[in-house]
Amino acid sequence: MPKPSHREKILTEGLKVVLDHGFCGASVRDIVHAAGVPQGSFTNHFSSKEVFGLEVLDLYYSMVCVNVRETLRNDLTPPLERLHQWVDAQIEFLVDGDMRSGCLIGNFSIEAGDGSEKIRLRLAEIFEELRESVAYCLKAAVTAGEIPAATDCDEIAAFLYASLQGAILQSKAERSQAPLERFKTIMFSNILR
Image 1 (cartoon, rainbow, N blue to C red):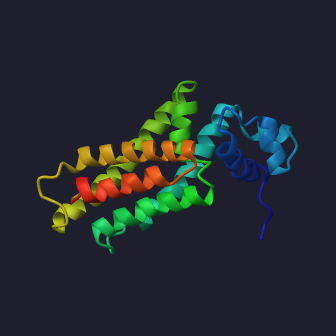
Image 2: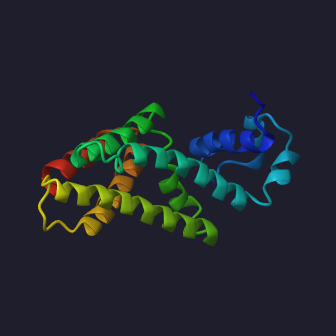
Image 3: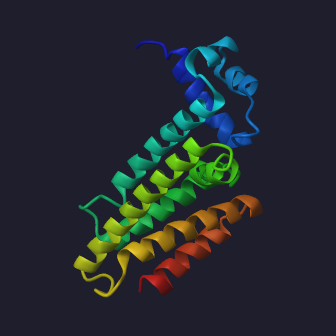
């Protein structure tokens, strides 16, 4: 099996550094140190920290997309069960990180969205793609008779994803999964009943 390239090491280890310290708090020195590569390797592979940030964001989003395919877009599972699995996967990821890392998409929205128009635009695309996946699942729930036919799936999807991001941020600040559990309870007992 071939050894990972310096570029791959910088991205994979850099993702961990960014999750631990935030995009703004992660210095190039921290990133290359974690990757175990010379500092010049960073500039050999990334023309700027912004370019690195976009690639780390896409790396993280590729992992999110695997989860989305296995849950929200998995047509073999009943729709509301898919939504449960999707939320549970978010909670599990955050618990595994001791409620410290949060969601890189939300973190980038706070940290890097104002400082980089390219990152802001990429985040907007990601938010829209995720909203569409939640809406896809909700529309399947309508078709399956699990939620009322009058449900505005697109609006509810936008609300649910924004609410989930808020619950993640609050859970990160409180170092507690209680806000996420509250989100999950209200989502299923009040909004999608």
